[in-house]
Structure formats: C-alpha cells, structure tokens
Image (cartoon, rainbow, N blue to C red; front, side, top):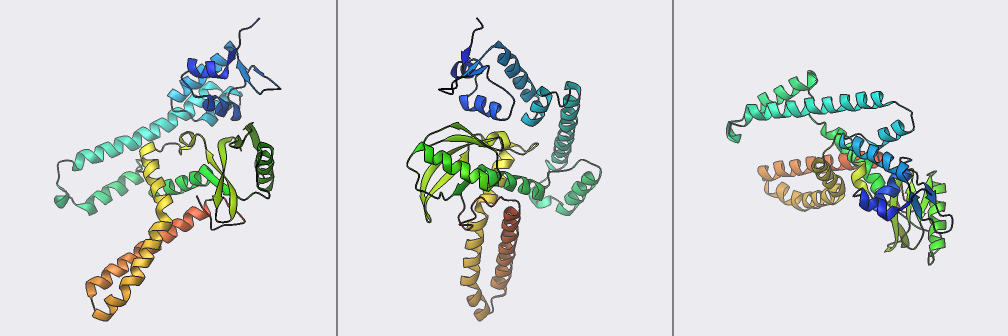
Length: 305
C-alpha cells in the first residue's frame, strides 16, 4: 500500500506552511492524493513530492505561480516557460545595470554640486534607449490594484452567530459579486478562496453594525511582478495614507489661507499654493486608486479598510 503523508508532515518536509499548500491547491498547482470526505483531511503521496520540488525549483527562478500552473497543466512547455522568464529577467537586469551605471556617474558628487537637469536628461535618454527606470505612476496603479484585493468588508443580511451562517453570507457575497468561492475551512474565522486568492474572515463591529472583514492570507505572493518588496511597501504606504494626507493638507490650507491674505504675506501665499498643489496631487492619486479598485462595499462606499 502506498504511503501517504498528512498536510502537516508535507509542510515540515518542504519547510512550507500548511496555508501555502492550501494556496497551491486553490491555484490548481498541487492536488492532494486523497481528501477525506468526512473530515476534509488531505493526504499526499510521493507523486505530490515531485510536483512540489518542481514548484520550488521554478520559484527559485522567480517564475510567477500562474506561469508554473500553465507549465504543470501543459498549456505551455518548459522551453516556452523558460524563454518567457529569461526575457523578463534580462529586462530586469537591464534596468538594474542602468541604475547602477547612473549611480556610478554621480556617487563622487555632493548634492549641492549635482546638476539635476543634466541627470534628468540622462535618465530620459536611457529611457528612450530601452533602459527604463521604474515608472512610479505605473507602479502606484499596480499597488492600488493589489490593495483592492488585499482586504474587504461587507455587511451581512443577518447577525452571524454560527459557522453555517458565516459560510452562507460568504456564498451570498460571492454570488452578488460574480466571484468564484471555495470554502477551505469553516468556522467563525473561516478560510476561503475568491478567484483563487486565499482569505481569512472575521466578524467586526463597524459604524453600520456588525460586518464581516476578510484579509488576504498570503499578500506576499501577489506583489506585482518585477517590484521589490521594499518598493511595494513604500508605495503601499502612499496608497493607504492618501486620504489622511489629503484631509491634513486641506485643513491646514483652510486654516492658514485667511491670515496669509490679510497680512499680505507673499511667502505664506506661495506656501499655500504649494500646499494646494499637494492637495490636488493627493486627490488625483486617490481618484486613481478608486478607479482601479473594486467596490467591495456597495452599501457603504465610504467605509474603507
């Protein structure tokens, strides 16, 4: 009889979390050898070990999970997958080489001596030649796209007091938003996937009453391709802080503007105009975030997490 291993044993053998194995299953990368129909316990065989080793190897090449899935499902062959990944890595290498070369040209200079206009001209020249620097606006939109999926909140029709009611509300929410829902763990803190993304939900008390709040279990797996974790974290801080920043700028502007006009303070007026420009920029950025965001909460569109 073929030896089977529990999901916990496999997680320890491959230095993975149990939720990572469930995530691979939700994406169609790894199917357990057997799932107990009564308990839902998953068992794995040596065949799944081979698949896991393949996933680990390809992830070491920084290959996206979706590309790995296509390869395992024979939608593409190994040569196609490697050619695509090689082209991506070469493009990233060009960006890094261009950035390193640019650092070398200015590292011996002091900030006061730095010719900013010439530096910008050089950057534009390199962009036209194909050695592009990161496009901040493009990356911002990519992060905003990610943030719309990172967490969401909705108001249930009934006050959920049992795991069954939680599951029913998640099913209702998925149906209303045309999302593919798979419940992986029932309970008062259920785990589930929406369109292949794994979430965990909890009940919270919000302004509209009791709500259900869900957060992505593995947000690190959905960082936009080609973006470093450090850059993603910085841009995420901007995305999250846009509304508070806009409110602070607006309040400061309205508070200081009358005094500046009354005293004829030219410098104050200039600062107020700069503040107004910052406010407009923040609002434009926020509008861009909304444009690229799902309306997770149609009942209370003003409620965000």
